[in-house]
Length: 397
Ligand code: FEO
Image 1 (cartoon, helix red, strand yellow):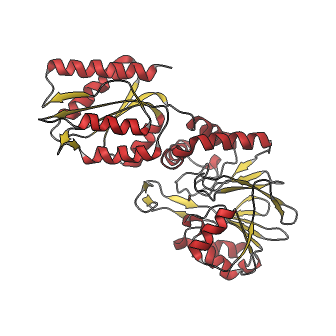
Image 2 (cartoon, protein in one colour):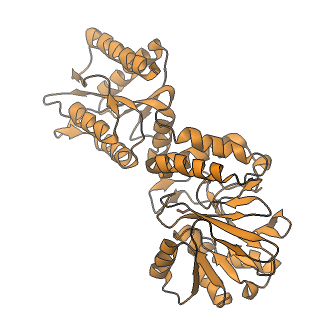
């Protein structure tokens, strides 16, 4: 089955992790697993681009060994320090101690502080290139996409871009290429990946895409470090990134809520009806019942974000706070937002939610909506009217 040849003499030698369900420790759900992609280039100076997460070291070594004796590696490009790509580096360097580790300056600093290896480093920056024989590797630094050390490697003659995490997706598949798998699943995972990891760096993504476009380098294939390889239509994921990096979202609204005895849920449903009446689509997601990373992906897609919770202990229910705190860190740009919730006697949750929405950077388009205990017919009408206003704001250009 493996390795898989991308082009003559260039092999995928990575690992498929079918059953990982949370990444970055518990921080990111991966319902469809992932892959750790590493690429072996046979040339006068055999080169490995990236490795795999430590527990998959044996898989990498086995795949490399099927093509070449690992001791013959002369270059190991480390596009990114994070351990899902560098975890097997100590084993590779033990097998090929004379190989040069090619990385950015911050990459070298990071690798030294992770592995403490006495390795030969070759630090590169944007515009640098290395001849490995018939082929040339050229490098583009990509700081904060998504770590300070990140960089892209471009195979000049083969026109293959290896951008590490960028354009990746957490999805385990039997096949390795975009023309062999279900593209709807791949794009769903690509956007979830973008929403949960790259959102804070969207202005940098947009600038990097422009920079690469200005370089005028032809790209026949994009081989990221997670998920499938884009060989049929690499422009598809580049265009998607350009769209996802823009502020705002589509003509829809996420209603994020939680409820104790159903009153705030009733408000959410009536607000949702008002949004739909205005002509915008809606998704109503209960924070305690929906995966946080899936909620964040939905928020990324939508222009509107309405959040509601009942008041408990002078604050909001904890699950709503957790999702909002994640969004404060990610700061998805260009959202319109508002807060709501039912209460019994003090009612602090809606203003507290509004404060978090402001921290996200959202434009608040309606005052907090509060209902004491259970909404009556008049209050249900108010929820619908309030929702209609949100819907109109979502549809505003
Ligand atoms: Fe896939 Fe930033 O590691």
